Structure formats: structure tokens, C-alpha cells
Length: 573
Ligand SMILES: Cc1cc2nc3c(=O)[nH]c(=O)nc-3n(C[C@H](O)[C@H](O)[C@H](O)COP(=O)(O)OP(=O)(O)OC[C@H]3O[C@@H](n4cnc5c(N)ncnc54)[C@H](O)[C@@H]3O)c2cc1C
Image (cartoon, rainbow, N blue to C red; front, side):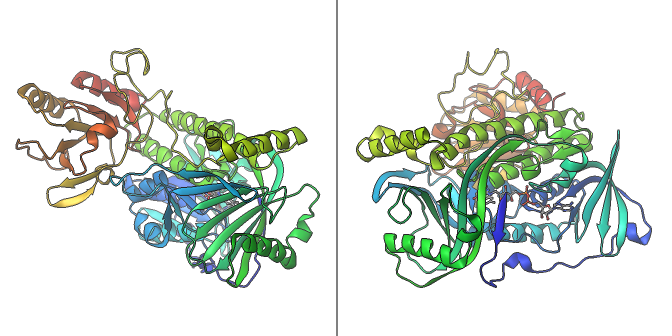
């Protein structure tokens, strides 16, 4: 949670006011909606957009009349962009954002580590993209406003909640009076101070760290490339840690750690911020004029609810969990919540799965949070060591890293990576007892991991594998090199027995004629020739992916009957 302070009168785009529109309930019509979403932050909006793509109608209520205020998330992971792309909203994020893959770590005035996140020409998006959260929210809000299935209601505050076995009723306050909003499910995406959480009497458990960071967004014209830089004990800020990120429109984020004795009120004063930032800019050789546009104080917290599902109320994003910002996982994991939750809610509401499928949302996403907590607790202690012992240990590691290669990865603030639902009950192993004991794959996305993107061509159309995911289960089937008659029979059997979309990935050398079949059989040519390597695939290999693109079963050579049962297991049937 942060204490925020706008340093200048700079207008954030999110400050554009949206109109309050009188809802049908205030005109005397009482509807019941499949899903009511509380909070139009990025996670609430992404959840509504995902549900719309799955054909589910939502009402989203937002107490404010604008999308977002202030400066928060800036680093979007490749996986988040893939989710946004599936929603159909990634283009403005990519057009406006700054992609990057490099990070540098310095100890005092020496570079001790250079991180280069894995990337390949076959991928659609760079590992990270920097974009101000208020743009992300505005792009999502604009997208939702165009969706007939999303009813976005600004200036509408949840004040109370009634829960019944088969529905929830939100009591909401608006400028024109209060009304009741009924929904089969209520998704709470109302942020760190969630009103829904309070109304249900739930509280977070976990760790709050004492270290504080001053977060300053400044306007500075600099030609330095988009990279993440982290300094430990720099001459500009001795004993402290400083992080620096470039954002679009010549905005730079500078985060610096405050010392225990520092007074927040004093540190937030413009002259204090100016002095500290100027020292750092001098140190790194930035000479241009600059001005502060936003400052806030941040304290890292690793907190989560015990469960994200409470009857027909489901929590997502910051309402469900808080993670330290080091490693940029808060919003990125919120987008993963939205995608995971949306397909499961859609399956339940369409009558394709039992309500118990939602339990797996809670289990999978909480496991993801706990993993992030484990990782970021280590990073947070490294970034803001609490005791003298911690400081000594950290400085010893940093000193060693100056000369020793093997220590360098340890001193890097790790970046967000997508979580693998390795132990999910939705995974299946065919006739094998577990993922490990007969795993024939040497690489490729393991069970629970998202599918890997790949440049492909469908007839004359170029694109990427994930462009053709659709809105259901998908089988990614490979024909690489050989396509013998028994392979042809296998494909025919899959098409006869399995009701799912097959993405047939072939290589350019294949000399056989295959015919597409409406949207059920899509033929994609691997243009960069990496399918075999990315998926450790041969002819007959199949990856079964859930509607959120996570692998739930895979076979080096698929068995049609096992595929059918894997799909049943993946719906928690
Ligand atoms: C300084 C900082 C830097 C960060 N950097 C990163 C980063 O680089 N990458 C990353 O992934 N994450 C980052 N995060 C985390 C990220 O900002 C959050 O995880 C993200 O905002 C969570 O989104 P949300 O939609 O869950 O909640 P919020 O963004 O808090 O949205 C909640 C919404 O609910 C509305 N609301 C609240 N109560 C009610 C009510 N009673 N009725 C109706 N509406 C209500 C609010 O007005 C708000 O619009 C950062 C956070 C901070 C503070």
C-alpha cells in the first residue's frame, strides 16, 4: 500500500471523467446478471473482458468516475501481453509501451551483473513492456466500453452485500440513489483495501516488511535505452538501493530505499526528492532538466487470503493478494487470475462444468501467490535488509559478485515469470502415475505451464500460434518431417473422437496435402523451424491446453482415448 502525492498538476489520462449513466435498476427494472464485478481496476476490467470473450455478460461497478489515478504498475510481462492479446486489446499496449529484455545490477559504482531475459524471433512479444498503469486501465476501459456483454458503471460504489446459496446481491450507492444489483456470482476486484473482503469479515495473512521506498516519477529526456537498472549502495544514495525504469513519454521511475531514521513527511517534500534524485542523475551522467510528476511511499507486503472463493463470491487481483513490487508481479499475477477465473466461471455458467471447478481457481492462483511470496520475500530482504546480519550477508554477496561470475545471478532482482500449475488436479498423465516418473519430454512447456508462442503461417496469413487459441480446449498436434499412414489414421481418430479445436503444426518440408475443417482443424506452418525444439515434438506429439492456454496433458505420441479422459479431468468432471 502506498502514500501518494502528486507533485505537479500533470494530468494523467486516467483523470478523464466517465459519465454516470442511470442504470435500469434505478428506472425500476430488476435484472439478475451472471456476474457482477466490483472494481474497474485493471484486474476487474480484464476479468470482464475475458468473460465477454467467453460469452458471459457482466456488470462492472466502479466507485470512481475515471480509470486509475497516480503511478503504480509499469512492467508488463510477456505472459500478460499474451493474455491481453487473447482478449483482443494488446495492440495499444504494444504501440504505446516500451519493450525490453535487459537489466543491469551495480554495486557502488561498478556493474556486477547484466541480465538478458530469454527471447527468440519466434516470439510475438518481448519479455517485458513498460507502460504506465493508467494507460493500461484506460485501454482496457475503452475495450470494455465496446463490448455489448460488459456494462461498465462508473460512480457506483459497493456498500453492502447479501449472500444467498444461489446468488449474491450487491447494495450499491450512486449519485442518483442506491439500488440492489443481483448476480449469480460476484467477483471482488476492489483492490488492496477491498470492501468485499471487509464485508465478509476476511483478512489477509502474511508478512509486511518494514523497509520503505520512495517512488518518484520524473519527466526527463534521455536517450538511455529501456532497461532495468538496480544499484546497491550507490555513491548517490549510500547504504540504500535505487531502481530505475524508463516509461513512455520521457517519464522515468526512480525508486530509492529510505533509511530507517528517515521521516516520510520530510522525504516527500519536493526539495528533499529533488536533492536525492539530482544526486543520482549526476552520478549516472544525466544532465538534462527534469521535473517530478508523482511521488509516493511504498512498503512491501506479502499478504493473501486463505481462500479466494467464498461461496459465490470470488476474489482476484489485489483484493485477493498483495505481493512486493520487486519482480513486478502484482498486476501481472492479477491478469493471470482474470484469465484463470474467467474460463472456469464461463464453463460453470454455460453448464459445461460443476461449480466445484472454481475451487481449482482458488487452489491454482493461491499456489501462484505463495510461490511469488517465496521468491519476492528473498528479493525484498535482499533489497531492504532488516538486520545488521542481513546487511552484512548482502554486502558480502555483492562484493563477491564483483569478481565472481557464479554469484551474479543471485544479486539480480528477479522478474515475473508465468506460474506453472504443476500439481493442479486438472492435469492428467494418461496411463502414467505422475508427471515425473515416465516423463518422455526433455523440454517444452510442462504440465500446468502456458503454451509457448511460435511464429506460424496459416495459408497466406502470418501470425503466432496463440492467435488461434479460440475460446475452448485446444490440442496442439505436431506433424514434423514424417507423416506416415499410421499418423494419418491417428489424426483421423482424434478428429472423430475428440471434441476440441486441433491446431496442426507442420513444418515447411512436409509434402502432404491436408485440408482444414472449419474452425476445428487449423493448419499452421512453423515458419522459423523451432516447433520441434520449443515443444520437444515429433509427429504425433500433442499438447492439450485449457481455455486459458495452460497445458493440462501432453503426449509424445497421443492416445485418443487418453485425450478424451484428460479433457474430462481438466473440467474437474
Ligand atoms: C508503486 C507500485 C508499483 C507497482 N509496479 C508494478 C509492476 O511494475 N508490475 C506489476 O505487475 N504490478 C505492479 N504493482 C502492483 C499493481 O499496481 C497492482 O497489483 C494492481 O493495481 C492491482 O489491480 P487491481 O485491479 O486488483 O486493484 P486496483 O488497481 O486497486 O483496482 C481496484 C479498483 O476497485 C475500485 N473500488 C474499490 N472499492 C470499491 C467499491 N467499494 N465499489 C466499487 N469500486 C471499488 C477502486 O476504485 C479501483 O478502481 C505496483 C504497485 C505499486 C503500488
